[in-house]
Length: 298
Image (cartoon, rainbow, N blue to C red):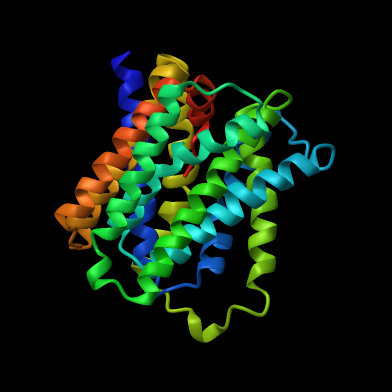
């Protein structure tokens, strides 16, 4: 059990690093190009793993499902995340992303037709209130760009929520590795298409550290965290594993303060804490949402 918990915690640490690298890479690469590079590398790695396990991804036979997952979970979520991180701090983005479980919960009744308990809805309202407090915490010093960045991260939460519930729905016919590899393949294509006409050579300012950050988000924050999380879920169970995803915004704030020297107001921290508390309460009151969150791959 302790080994499983350790794997879950390490996975959230690696995902937290994705926000830090995304913020660091903001001036180096356009969001669409960064996402294309990240998932192109990840797709090659995941494809290699599938070949080693003698699995053949149903790229064509289930292209509608995989393309849908790739659009929302790989293209929309990641691109919006990196776009938002160009405008606001990693700490702020991480705390807003604590509302992801709420987005999952909101889509669950409509996509999965599952009943959500009253306690889960109370947690949802609490979490939304926390996000509002979090945003108001920096309202006085906010620029129009940073307010837009907040909204972009909120949209990324909805993209991930839809990806997660659709992943559970499609998961009846596919295992998590197959879905992730297929979604990465199509998501990379969508990301590459989005670069056409929007990326100019003058926008690229890569350094050695920037390439290392790209390598990190393509391996440790994608493939590595995915396997650690799923290994941990296998040991402790989906229900017990789900609350640990709430460590993600905590690590993001800690890393943002230490590595990027970001500053977070007490009001924003209080809002982040309320958001996390609401998300935990929501996960305790909705079995469907709790199981869906076991496939988290930021």
